[in-house]
Image 1 (spheres, rainbow, N blue to C red):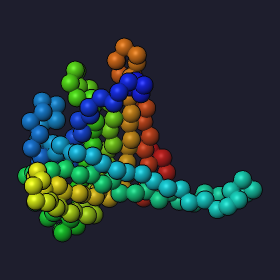
Image 2: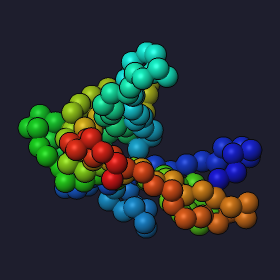
Image 3: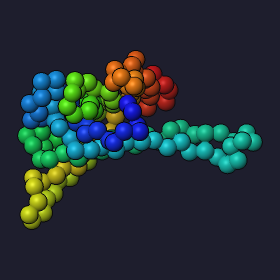
Length: 167
């Protein structure tokens, strides 16, 4: 993707096994359209790590996303309340307009809805939900874009939290 150009509009979708969203998109039908997300990790280190101290076990953050309240909302709420296990969830991103190819994805396996919050305000649009997903395995993929706009071979990385190793 050309990072020197103005930021293109991005569409985000989330496909969660057993939970339908309201997307009518031809490639992401019945998925959840999300407004944004946040995920990360930290690596605890002992100082001075340059003199033999080492790193510890990665601390993987849950993936948090926001969405307008939709038909998936009650199911996400109930999944959190019941502690239901979900086989898989995949977040994808693509540039809006044009050929609309997915260039970014995060695939989660052995998923649990660990938090569900909803809220709104007077004069605002639909209520907004904030949902957090815990997981046992993650695969992260990004597809660089050439100067002519074609997507290149994906760059992938993954981590299995139960085994504490790359996948």
